[in-house]
Image (cartoon, rainbow, N blue to C red; front, side, top):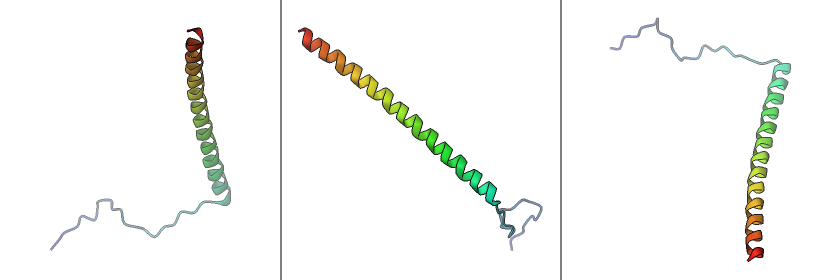
Length: 68
């Protein structure tokens, strides 16, 4: 027969439901949308930097080939 120590914290459900107000839901949506926009801007900047590097490399190659 198993014995249980009832003083220990369990992960059992208490039946309590936590609900957010409409304002909190709107705020959460705005925050998540803002984070997605910031992530998108970061990705665009990274791609732009990579394209700048590629164009500078291509420019250097074209200068070498035109000089020879």
